[in-house]
Structure formats: structure tokens, C-alpha cells
Amino acid sequence: MAIASISEQGLKGKKGPNVYYSVEGITYVRQYVRPDHSKPSELQLAGWSKFKVANRFAGPLREAFNLGFINYRKGMRSPAKVGLGLLLKKAFRDGLPEPDPALVQISAGSLTGMENGKVDRSDGQHVLVQWDNNTGTGNAAGRDRVSLLLYDVLHQKAFFMAEGNPRSAGQQEFHVPYAEKHLGNLHVYAFFTFKNPVNQNHQVSDSTYLGLI
Image (cartoon, rainbow, N blue to C red; front, side):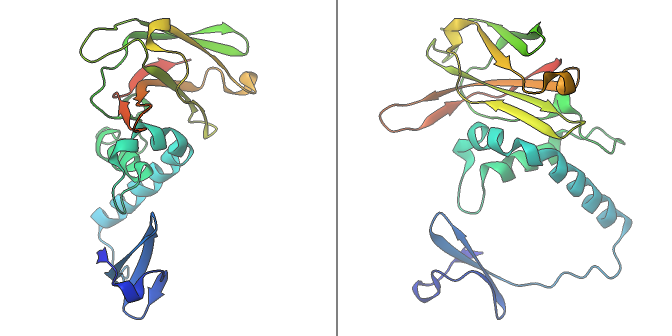
């Protein structure tokens, strides 16, 4: 794969022996190779099945991935692809056909993460996430904002809150739409970010899995 020539900029799709992609206004080109699926091996079949399961699992997480892996965007590599790649690499336990939600990572970065996080129901429509204010530990600052993901794997429904309360607040309440359907099935994740007001760049922490609520 390479950046297309000036005369090829703007092309999309398959053209002759090449395939063209546009990423952030730049056209890339690669040679088209027709895959041979006539006699797949058992290993290939297992790999395709795993990818299909992972892709379905990751579909509702795109919004969270877009922030959690914002610093990994480069060329054809999108945050969503990074998230899917980590899911395939880390979230499948040996011998199990489905990802383990506790092993799923929704963000990555060098910002200090959450300390002693926990989640509880605050009432029939809300959950409450609490954590220790670890400002001053590593590069943690009170201004860092918490982002929360609640994911009902059973119903393939994700609820995402981007950059809510500051780290110094020590807690964040989250309203769950149609709570009676989803509470009891929600896997909860949290991470911190800081968006530089001058250059708009983000610092991001690794995500923390808080459990099932």
C-alpha cells in the first residue's frame, strides 16, 4: 500500500489491477489480490470465525474507540481498527468462542489511570462510578476528565459518556436509558483524558474494567 500518484488522487474502489482508498483526504493504492477461499484450512476457518465474532462485539464500541485510541490514528489505521485489533489479540481466552468482557481494552495511553474504581446502582435509572482522587500520582491531574462506557453484550447496546466529571470529583453518575432492559447486563469501563486547549491534542489513560452492574 502506498500513497497514490497525483494523477490518481481522488480515485476510489477497484480500478483495473489496483484498489484505491481515501483516508483524511489522501488517496492510497494497493494491488488487488483475489482471495482463494476454495479450500480453506481449519486454521483459516477458525480465524474467520474469530474475526466475525470480534467484529460483531466491537461494532457498538466505535464511539468509545474513537476517543480511547484517538492518538493511534495514522494513515489507514483508524481508532476503531486499533480497538478491534486489541480485542482479537487480548480478549479471547484459550478455547472460548466469545471475548471475555473483562479483558476488553477500550483506550490506551500514558496518562495515569483510575485508582480503586467501583460501580454501583444509585437508583433504578442511574449507575454511580466512584474512584480515588489520585491527583499527583504519575502525571494525573485534577483537571483530567472521566469517560465511561456501559456495554450490554447480550443486547449489543453500548452507552458512552465522553469527558464527563474531572478526576478531582471522585465520582460520575450515568443515566441508563431503558434501564429495566439493560441493568444486570452492563459491563462498565472507565478511562481519563486531558484535551490540551492550545493544540487540541489528547492525553489518554489505559481503560479500567469495573465489572458487571
